[in-house]
Image 1 (tube, rainbow, N blue to C red):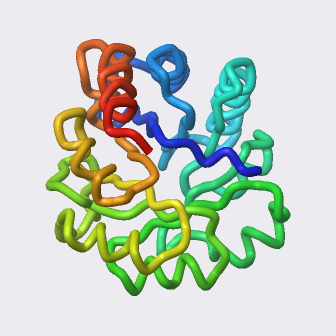
Image 2: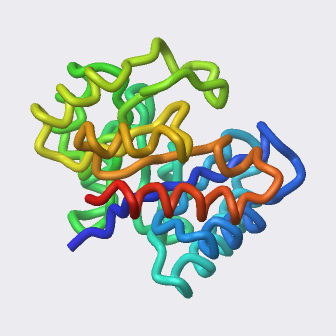
Length: 210
C-alpha cells in the first residue's frame, strides 16, 4: 500500500534562508511529519540531486515518505518514493511509465476540473488548493475555500491533501471537509521553530480525527 500520509511538509529555502532543506527535513520529521516534499526550483541539477539523496536517506531512516516536487529527473536520481506534479509540469501518464506502478504520483489542482484531470491521468492523490489565502506561491491562483474542497472530496475518489494557507487553527475545518491531510510550506519553513510548528500541525490533525 502506498504511504501517502497526512502531514506533508514542503521544504523551501527561497521564502526563508535560516534553514537548509536538510535542517527542515530533520525538524519536520521530529515534529511528526509523515511526508517530506523537496521543493527546489533552481540551482545546479547535480547539487539538487545530492541534496535530494541526503533527504531520501533521512526520510528512509524514519520511515517517512519522500517526494520530489516537479523534478522527475531528481526524483529518479534520488530514488524518491514519488513525485508531485503541477498541471503544467511533467505529464502524469508519462511519469507513471517512467516511475512504475509502485511509486507515488501526486497532482496539483486548483479547480474541480483539474482534480478530474489528476484522477483520469492516474494520480495517487490530489494536492488541492489554495484552500485559504497564501503568500507561499506566486502562482497559487484564487482561493477555493472549504465548500469547493468538500465538493472535490465528494466527487474525486482519491486522497485529497489540502494546501494553501493551512495552519494549525484551520486544520480541523479542512479535515471535517473530508480532506485526507494537509500540505504546508510557510506554516513550518518560515516559523521560528519549524519542529514545534510541525508538532502543532500534527496535534491538530490528531485531534481532528481521520
